[in-house]
Length: 356
Ligand SMILES: *Cc1c(COP(=O)(O)O)cnc(C)c1O
Image (cartoon, rainbow, N blue to C red; front, side, top):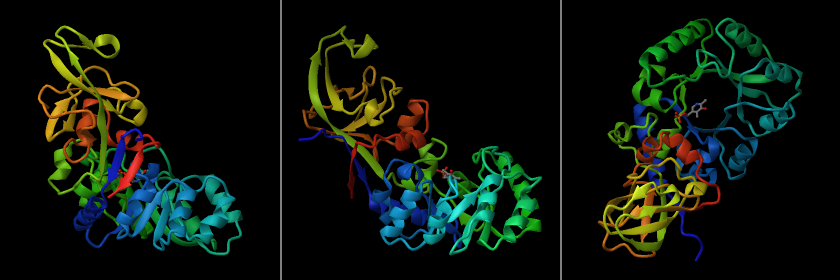
């Protein structure tokens, strides 16, 4: 048998999460954000569950081509646009929409001779200060692009720097409305938390990422479970060893956990090389035989040690859920000082996926 760590991708959860998003933004079009290999879930494993979306947003040309070759005829958005002017012909051929965020990209488009005109999202830097044209030049950029024969459609796009903060959102929306007033066009601003909690940001197209996968934009699982979102991924493995340890023994590297009494412990085939966070402290929950158990000592490269005190049925080969329906990935992220975004997207590419 091969090493038992597996990620199960539940297609019905993708479908129902997408339905919930639609109910929050009726009449809006949806870019399902599948960058970072679908937040670690793998593009090939999720896109069919998201077929009712209006478009897919991603970063790499080869992923866009993968979708086209598999028959996806809807919209595709390259979130960082193109990296090299040579890509423009391919982008036009596959009818992809691209973000334009820098002047060199405009120059490249002007110089290009294309068989089909381009669909462009112009990135407005409204306060994130990462990509885009600022409020002083955005209108000129829009007018300039609007006059080019290489371009067929134009939209205004921005990204919120703190979409859990209403004041920050209001500041950015004010700048946006100043632009739209003079240049009315297709609008696309809202990521997951703006979609759920700031309906005024919805524009024409929305861009959900993390909530598609049933995890929370702010680390607080209850905020999204209230809305019915379901985790898409279950990361599971098995117990591959069991030890009986006497009292006053130390467990694992550096002996950070000392047994106060006799203890039965289990070793799981999952570690930080698989993408489980090395920072997860003693006490971090895992799910085994329908109960919560907890990690003891340090997470190792390929293993985690857990307490079997309250798991009399646990034996070698028992299934363990690291995160999924019973143990939320948000909970593990919070305990490890990070966000579900990082844990999911850093899941090791070597892990087997099972589409359910
Ligand atoms: C990642 C990303 C999103 C999705 O953000 P979530 O918080 O996961 O919903 C939307 N827009 C852009 C530009 C992004 O890079």
